[in-house]
Length: 249
Image 1 (cartoon, helix red, strand yellow):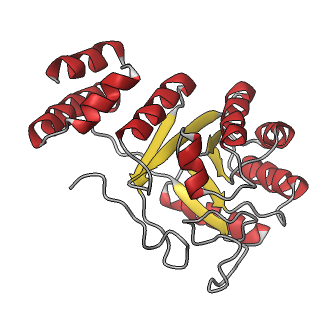
Image 2 (cartoon, one colour):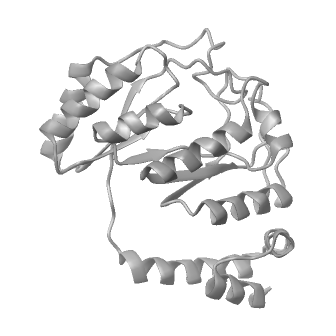
């Protein structure tokens, strides 16, 4: 096991079988070794600095119906809202005064915010805060739309692939959504020139060591600028609310 950790640190990659072995063989001792190595590498690159982001949740409308997400279109118990352009700009102004230099526009896949509206908003943000980075987290779009947002001033895009295994993806999403399309969005974002963030949820139903290994291999291939990994916590008003799986204690 320790040889695998040394290989991972040196080569920054493992085979699928090696990933599965490492994940399934995790013990408190092995975990502490991994944490120690990770801390050392983090301090080499970032020291002990903390980077803050101004997150603006500007809409909770969404056309999608993912089985775990609280803002899914079928959730009738949710109060829906959209911030106006001026409200979004006011958030940026307040954040700027507080020292934020990165603004993240995050929301559901809301068709009310058309390409034209988003471009106009981004251009105003960039004109008023030219030294600030703008990150988008608004889901799947076609390449032309991604390009328009990049041209208007967006620098970064967050789009977690959630799972690299197609069968597992089907368990979490309705038929109208496609893992192939989601992956293609990530490749388009990279090609355009965004700083790209991807990532996964850990502990979702149907997920085991093999699925996690496939996620890690895909992330190695994609080589994003950021990886977000968080626990699977389904919203109470969703089909998967009672199906949370704990991978390990």
